[in-house]
Amino acid sequence: MRKTVFTLLLLTSFGVSAQYINSFGVRGGLRGVGLTYKHYLAPKLFLNVDGVGTYSQELQGGEVFAMMNIRNKIHNTFFQSKELTWSYGGGLHAGYYQDPDNTNYESNIVLGPDLRLGAEYLFRQKICIGADANLFYNVMPVEKIDGMDEKYYQFFSVGVFLRYVLN
Image (cartoon, rainbow, N blue to C red; front, side, top):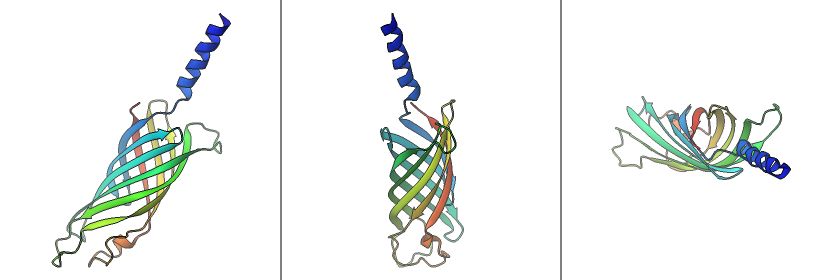
């Protein structure tokens, strides 16, 4: 009887402490508004994919970015909470912008590396909220786009997200 009770307690404790595998939600920040997806590859390693878009008055059109990075999760008991996790990692971003004044047929593609630091809080209702800071560099376009007011030469961005845990 003791072995049965011990085994049941052990199995239920694994279920409570297990991490979710996938989450999906919305994201907003300095680089635009869009969708976000997170998938755990290992207990502390996950893939984060964001797709954001924004309207640009300078371009009289829009721009779309996709950011993909692999991040490492850190549990920190600074706030005495198991639900709060921190993460850091790196990846790539790629984007496309619409430039109506592009008469020289220059590239409309933006591409470069990213570094990210983030925090996430997981609620019992299978909802998580978080924020992250992002350092990035645009390798493409190489030359400044006329009328962009240094938009593609920024190096820092922040964002917030709300995700629903799928499983």
